[in-house]
Amino acid sequence: MIPAALLTSNADRDLTSQVTVVTGIPDASNARWCQVSIRLGDGAKNLDGSGGLFEITIENAGQTVQPDPQYVRFSTAVRSMVVTQPFHVTAGATVTAKVKSPNGADTDVDVTATVDGVLGQLDALTSSRAAAAKMLAYVQLLARSDAAIEGDLATELGEINADEGSGAGNYSGQTDSGEAIRDQGDSAYLTATGFLDAAGVRTAIGMGSANLDTQLADIPTVAEFEARSIVSADYFVVGDYTAPLDAAGIRTAVGLGSANLDTQLGDIPTVAEFEARSIVAADYFVVGDYTAPLSAAGIRSAVGLASANLDTQLADIPTVAELNARTLVAASYFNAGSDEVTTDAASRTASKATGFAVPGDEMALEDDAITAAKIAANAIGASELATDAVNEIADALLDRASAIDGKTPRQALRYIAAGLAGKISGAGTGTEIFVGIDASTTRFTVTTDASGNRTAVTYDA
Image 1 (cartoon, rainbow, N blue to C red):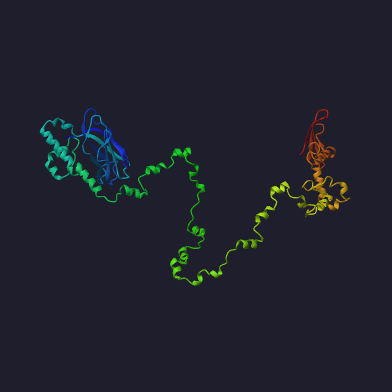
Image 2 (image 1 turned 30 degrees about the vertical axis):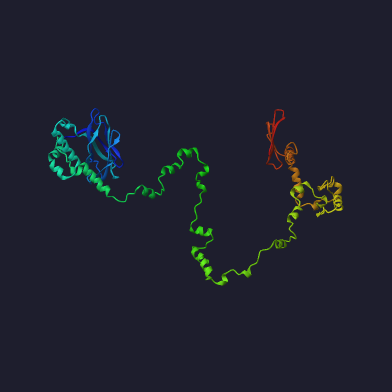
């Protein structure tokens, strides 16, 4: 039996994650028995030599061939080869082989993978008893890992490894058969310890029950965040975050000077100590020192309230509404003229005689209360005014806004002085400039026509 390559693929592969090394349809017209051969390393781009358990996955017509993955323990050789067990492929079915290395350095390895038809040359023998026996021998060599079967079927083993022109094979059931591959997996995994079960995994990550989907569903999606379909208040505002108190901050917050709460609590008598009276008697409360709180009468006496009529007394105080409505007797109002409270009609009449009147209930000055005739001669003179009062009055008059055609009296006087007594330049040129009597400040500029008529005047500020 000579395997015939039905599919072949060669490329440099990154084996650190599962990668497809060959895929295709071995035979579009006929069903075939096939096996996959995978050669890793070509002398230039090799394995890193760490060895370990490599994973192989075979997919046949969309179905995964079991066991999956098939674990194969590699030695430290940098160039290695592995051959899978034969499997049946229906006509037109697609076969895919994938490999994954356990070593992070196997990122650029030359990989040649083939899908071989293993029973093609035996088809002609299926009608004979010898062919059946021969086929059984081949199956035994492919399935069993004991040395005895290799001795019993040495001829068939030789046929498997025969040189057909491109080199002899080195297949051995003790290392390459299905049983041998299974035993390698048993050795590596069936005796392994420390693997968590489902409950252990949940405990390790702090998950109370198998509800990860439910918990993840509570997390807003990108779309929900962008659409803001959850309540804005539910978002975390980083700027509002206040760091928790440290140990010293907690002690300060509760008024604890130092980390001695145990000591302070230890000073508090326990129930047993109270019952046993094991603390000093003087530390107990002395009933004789107790002063009872004031009674109702005692409280009234303490605040000067003769009887329980605070509501009545407060009711006698005018409210804002009562003051605004002037609902009290007019005689009770304050007399601003005498700086006293007016208590009777006579005092109100006296206030009126001094220039104050009480129209209705409102205090006001009478008409003509202040006239020239009522002001004494020389009542307001230079001696009665402050030193700078005259200047302030003059300045107020001179700077009165818009007093003369939109100008202040001070501005008008400056323009008059410049026009009558100030310098002039540009006379007869059509533009005449008038300077103030300070001989430097331009007060106004006149534009004239050929006849000397003023057509425009521009004033300074």
